[in-house]
Length: 297
Image (cartoon, rainbow, N blue to C red; front, top):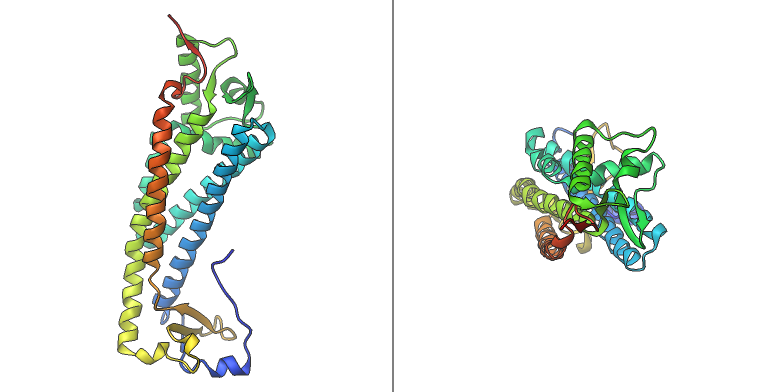
């Protein structure tokens, strides 16, 4: 999407680039790494925006009880959520190491809804429709999902689903079969994504600041590298990677502070997480896995 820009090289605008760096990948490593981490963070946020759009449309489809819309936007939501989590995990691993990704796997271990909907992504990719409409309301039909031919959950989640099915049969009047409440399950899942994304933004800004400080130090030692014939180009570092990109001049904004943008995104996520947590608490009477069953007297 919008993580990079290109401009047509002409004699005029090339003449306006009065200073540019040229070196090997190793010599330009700080700049290359800085470009990569900021590009990756922007890409993750664009997937987050896709996630938020899908969530908004899913809520509208649920309000109108649109079966096709509910399934379409749920599949989009959990697909975007999985992409976000995988991309954040990769970004953290590149900058901090594998062990620092644990905050993502801990959410998976601690939240049934998060784990369940991640597996439903695989379920839908096998050609199955995840949401049923029963008594004019969307629900997750556990028996239908559990017994689908040619598809199996992993062992851990399979055991949890089995336990929920047994719990519902034992404690609730479930003539329709064991169901999971749709809205509270989705809300719990989205809260997991928001928590993961918030922690990611808090963590990655440290690495961004480290790279930016190194670039600012280089500018302080050699201020002419951000001065050019066209004032509109001032503040940018232009560079060529030897033996890799000899024909392309690349550029990075060396003045703007990406952490200001990251801080803004983090505050937005904190606000939406508070809102969704309140909504989830209001659903306690339908908490997972009770769904829409009457309690036995």
